[in-house]
Length: 175
Length: 79
Image (cartoon, rainbow over all chains, first blue to last red; front, top):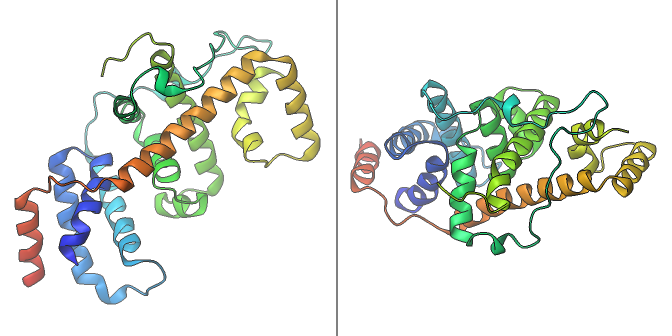
């Protein structure tokens, strides 16, 4: 069982943490799981249950990590004139994103830009849009209200959109 | 309806969470504001990129699992 689960769990941990911390998080998760396996009530798949424990572990580790690359969320949200019109208009993105950059590179750019978001927004974005958790599950995991999750998710998506904008305009694809 | 109002509630609009009357006001704004259309399309594309990130990650199991991690977990299990 252990060997089969390490791969998928390590993949999840790498989304949140650097390599060394991701390995530590997986190891610590397995130790927790081995000590608490009798509390697993079979309400979800075993892997899902272990993943929840791992993600909590990753979030706790992320909180204690100093991150230098984070950009304040307000710097990434649209700004408006007094009449409610946007200061900077939005150029349209190409219909096919493959026209801009190849798929693998695009994934790398998305990952790099997610890492620039403040932790409070990054975790909500990852749990909701990448891990596919519901608003309620995300709220429970982060000890937030469902409303707060919605607000953070919307802001995080807008911020990531702003970070991806230069790439989509073909201005820069530097990682 | 201003662009600011539209964008602030864009997520709720896309999720169909707005009352029917408000939804219509948003629809009308989109019909007269190409800038908000472009913003909405790029916002939707951002969500697609994120979902794809999850699908890609799910379909690729890493092969480079450090031996030290495997050993540590197997040791912990055998205790």
